[in-house]
Length: 295
Image 1 (cartoon, rainbow, N blue to C red):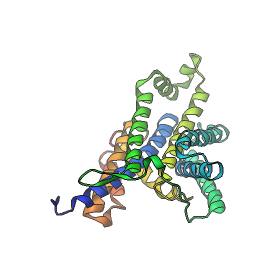
Image 2: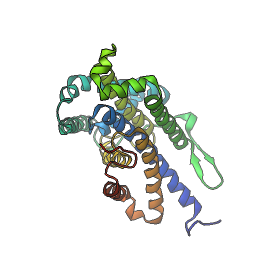
Image 3: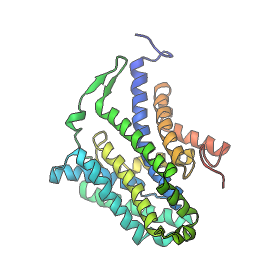
């Protein structure tokens, strides 16, 4: 069997696949953060907790009502996104005229409350969520074995990420939304309900986090800390891509997942910090991020 740089191909491609899986979650979560920050200027620190809520709601639907994974993909983003709408209306909307720091502190507090509630109710040991029967097993690609479910996660993440980018950057609705964030008074003069549009945008960003939670539930155990473990890395991804850049969040998420996987092959000790090293270098060279615009 041939080797690449002295590394067995199974090990190399296995870690690349793992990196691509992580990159799929980085991209989905950083996309939600970029949508919320780019359009609303809110640093949503509760994003990780809302990702965890998505996984837990899927688990509860299956355990208590028998609603399966496929229905959960539709229902959970609606339910958790609706909770985001309530949070935006009752709390975040009061902070738009204040400094970004107030929004960060509010959402950080919300994250702690949400995680504490789930930790108190379900503990921290983790709950299993089965892979749907249709996606069980795997496919032998010759050079590696690809689990079907992980292949599905990559494809679903790519489709959702680029569909969101297209909707925001290339459609009339996206143009209205971007215009509303730049000049809400002018857009309101055309009869568009700007506050409702902003509320629904926040709900959509939260729904993306919930969708990522449903996709993650069969791979990782469902536990209250699953969002807290990921959110710092996701924030680093958003900073590297450029705060508020939709395309930057997507490309950087997938790219850094692959870089992390390769690092795990050649220098495993560095895999936990490689993203933060890249973030430090990018901030020194290009403070606005790879795809961000200098204000």
